[in-house]
Image 1 (cartoon, rainbow, N blue to C red):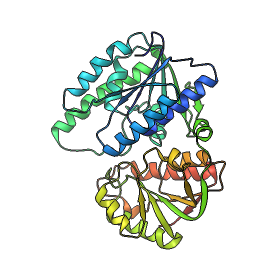
Image 2 (image 1 turned 180 degrees about the horizontal axis):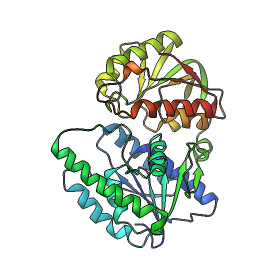
Image 3 (image 1 turned 180 degrees about the vertical axis):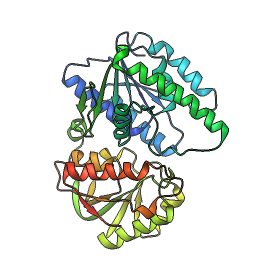
Image 4 (image 1 turned 90 degrees about the vertical axis):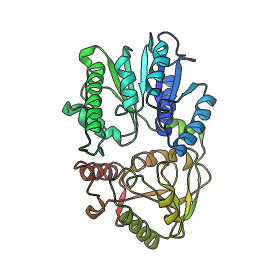
Length: 353
């Protein structure tokens, strides 16, 4: 339990927990966090690979002296209410709330009832770019790949989410007296909101630089699973990269479908499902000299994580023909922004699939 006036962090993914550890490292070094003032609450997802990575990240966080507890908010319709009730005592009297995903329905419910005078949003990957855009535009917080649906029950649910999202916006705005800050590895700015830069100093200090070998590794994405990209086009793109760059290993995203990965294996690739976020897994063992990624968080994080190595990162943009009919109108612009901003920031080269 977080101590009175202490810090409570709520995370739902391995990347969020990694970034909380990085924030704690940064905050302790700057005198903003002391001793055992931080309690991390994991709100476990359903996806089994995500759960496995979260357990491994939880062990690393505990090694760093952080207190980590595990909750199951997604076991049935009443589980969220039970989780919120169980967290009520911990939310009372805390001085700082750290959250990893301002778009999460579970976290938005918790944030809407918290009265912590300070809120820190830690990076949740490239979704942070969309958070920054929506915050500046004064919009309700919703994911960039959300798809409209005619289903009435889903519409009612979306209406409820909008109400909670609006409440969260008001809760963390400067007008409410809340001190809001953002801890991010991305190059974003928010009016009147301090942005602390995450340079992955903890990862680089904790894990030695990997051995670099010749060849190419391909980094996978869950764009097919989220309904943004057509599976057949994606698989043809992977096959093209294998032929062009002699790729022999594929780092799977934690949300990629097993059947799709089996098809990728039939292309002659070794599929690796890391037990830790790629920002850590990339520093363990052997890494290819050339890394190829589709537009995703790693095109912004790996240049920082691997800055002390000769590894080269290339970005493969998504062709217009790859998008599904269900993809939101924002998808293409958003992924183009992810790719172009990384190329500009780090001088990454683009490749064609």
